[in-house]
Length: 501
Ligand SMILES: Cc1cc2nc3c(=O)[nH]c(=O)nc-3n(C[C@H](O)[C@H](O)[C@H](O)COP(=O)(O)OP(=O)(O)OC[C@H]3O[C@@H](n4cnc5c(N)ncnc54)[C@H](O)[C@@H]3O)c2cc1C
Ligand code: SF4
Image (cartoon, rainbow, N blue to C red):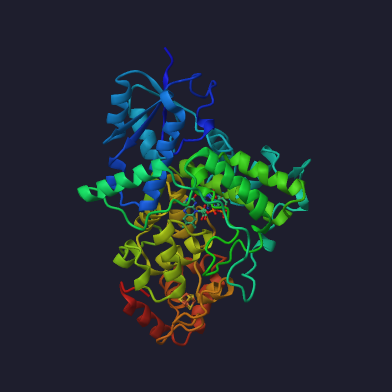
């Protein structure tokens, strides 16, 4: 009898059902379990819950009679209901907790992970070969480019350089409200979406599950067909402009030239190889310049892949890292995504984007939301949980390195060489957000003091000793000595309390 195959809700693309030695049996019956307890454990953004359930139910509908779709309280119960004690295969899940679960079920054979470019043992060998501790994303990225012959001309990087970051850090163009690039793909809802929404309403009414944020209309792909259309549209119409303003922010244009593909990649609807290959084809056929294509390839074959590998390499204890000893709980206005309570224009704008869509691009995540949390000494695990719950593309594997490592520096520098935080001057340079704000980016004391500027200096002061030993931060720390109003600034920072800025 053919062994059944279990698909998790982030294993929904065709590559998770390709048979082979490291895959399910040919025409294996498929089991998909919708476990309600997942939504009881965390207070998710409603748009995220909607997207995931819609994607899972759409996949079951596509597979028709081949799939059993089980609604149960837990995975364990659902699997037992579908198969009793019969054997089942599953591809390596994407979290430590899920891996523990599948290993604890005696009937499950765990197959290698799919949906990434580099097999885990290859990464372990690479990382161990680099001494294990001070790994560099840039080295990893070049190794992946070489190994996958990605954007390469023989042994040399195509376009003459490995790294085009220098061309991809422009501020937004002056005097524009939007980048005026063609809009991204947006899906159309159907009866399955309607059914999911109805179920979410029912769960909320029953009182044991609650959500945060606004739901609908669905903005991100839930099927392979939709995700492929989104990728096509990005490559054909938006990739060319991806590079130059990658780090910039515009109040009226939250998406700019970003791809919006993270949720589709993380649901397993797209494979990273097809994304980078299509981007490379666009460069080779003259449709997109090298800086944009290399920038996009770096995000996927560099950052995304690196983050996935580090999640497993650093191990489950990494989540407990708290090198800076930050323990402050998150305030209610942040937990509730209460953008209307916030005066600081940059933070209000970004929090409203998260509340309304469950998404903002990389720089608002890192240099606004994450940076604000870091400056205030918020508990890194609580910050991680917040990102995980509130973002449509948030999963444990992607959160740990991005939040514990990159954004909160809680690992003391295992992932990045310095903490990512800034005063208002950086935000002013890279956005139009300060225009019209009640605060002034250059002021650090007084009624119009920018909370990012005050917070930046207070953060440097708090961790002066540690940061002065970091070559990339020592000059900034020395700047504290030039501040004549340091005491006043620190008092202002203390007075902030939990209030929204
Ligand atoms: C604090 C913080 C939290 C983040 N949380 C998540 C998250 O929960 N899920 C997530 O997928 N990304 C996360 N990122 C990375 C990045 O911000 C998002 O992948 C990106 O903003 C998604 O939008 P996009 O698809 O338009 O990306 P683009 O700017 O178009 O980039 C292309 C793709 O590159 C990949 N990518 C780029 N950077 C990263 C990265 N650091 N880690 C993983 N993938 C990356 C994504 O798949 C993305 O779709 C986080 C970054 C920070 C700083
Ligand atoms: S002045 Fe400060 S708070 Fe206001 S938008 Fe600029 S950086 Fe943000």
